[in-house]
Amino acid sequence: MTKPSFLSIALLLFISSCNSQQDARTLAIAEKNAIETLKPGTIAATTGGWTMTAKIDGRDWKATSLMSPEAAGRYIGYYKDEYIGLPRFEQKYAQLGKKIIFKEGNAVDLSVSGDDNFYGGYSGEMEITKLNGDWLEAKFHFTATSHGSDRTIRVTDGFYRIQYGK
Image (cartoon, rainbow, N blue to C red; front, side, top):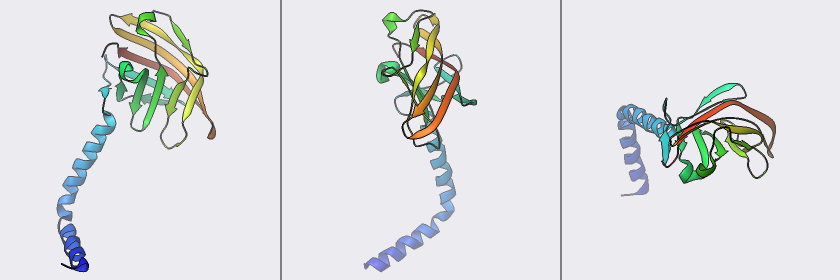
């Protein structure tokens, strides 16, 4: 079969299959949303379970999934293509009221939608507010900047709940 004939047949098959494309498109969108909600290797965020919330420049933000601190070495919450990555408390040193001050070498990682820059939070803190068995809760806030931008991002009212050993 010649190349032009093959292309003509392929185009004809493509056009005739367009009627079923809506179902395939709907399925593809549902699969994409499921992947964005729960990235491979993460744990789904739930009310009363694994949770991370904050306000990013006043906008409510809520993680749909979190990475286990044992796997990542950090507390990382994801929402679509955004994430917040916090330094972690070593479980053996975790105690109520313990704080981590964000600074060079102990910063927060931040990625926000619509901005290709990578942000680091070098000011702010997080504090353990509750320890219950192997569950840890903490609050946090920070200001993030990037070498690639003049933008400053303020993250306030941060909260997370994670389970150690999972």
